[in-house]
Image (cartoon, rainbow, N blue to C red):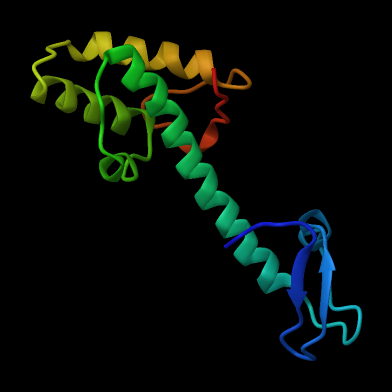
Length: 140
């Protein structure tokens, strides 16, 4: 899905085509100006897309810093399966040990926690069960 503004919107009922900003489409209660067909399904699909992209971005941003700090390179595929801070720490522990970098889990936990605090836009309380999607990371 390419997100260019204005976004091309086609009504599924009357086939009218018009162009609007994404923010317009995401407002609650939006419908086709011609036939009043609700755009609720379009809004839901767009929300799912944004959630998916948030997950991808958070994992990617976090691992860019982790790779630099621990001087390792990690394949993208396993990162996509990580959902929580605890998953990330466990994965990193196994990955580092498999590459001959033997750090204990407490050290890795403290480093990952520091990285999360450092790259988060705002401070939020978290523990090992906190989903990665709860954070909004920034590039350093």
